Image 1 (cartoon, helix red, strand yellow):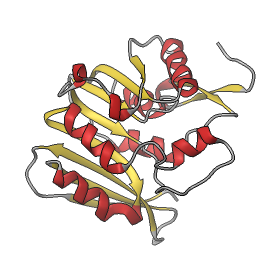
Image 2 (cartoon, helix red, strand yellow):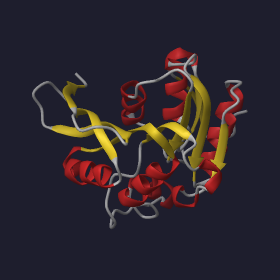
Image 3 (cartoon, one colour):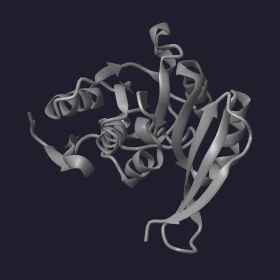
Image 4 (tube, one colour):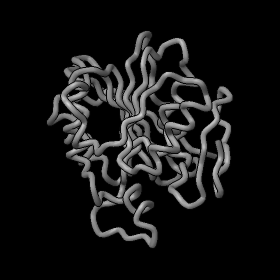
Length: 221
């Protein structure tokens, strides 16, 4: 199943993910998000901005008995193809949709109990020699507001959004979630070392949830 320039990465639970040196490769952010998100029995899961599918696949590996269904949404055909082949490689029944987040159709409205997202972090203006990689890193085709609009639409009442983002955009992220009735319930700041300045924030919000947030701090070393 591997083409030139491709390799296999083995995640927790022996889940195998196909990566390509010419395309955007996943980072530790994706694994942190998959570990941070909490599962509930019978979860219908959507992985938004899925890339090669790492977040959704790792989440499934950690909670195989809880996940009732799993859908991946990725706009770039080459990455969607990697994701689809990884799904096939792991003999999963998950579905891969090659579409922009903004264009997810009405069939998915209020269809999910959990949405996972590792979105582009950078505001407009970020450039990269490779347009494919730039789309994964910068809000060239998807803004945070558009992403949160989609999450509100596809989540059931009581459904959760688990998202990772830059720590310095935490105010924008939390305000955007609350404006769409996705109440932040859990927040984790991540630094590169103990006592270091946080560079990532992980947030879980509940659609229609009550106010009150649990805050933790973690370091990768």
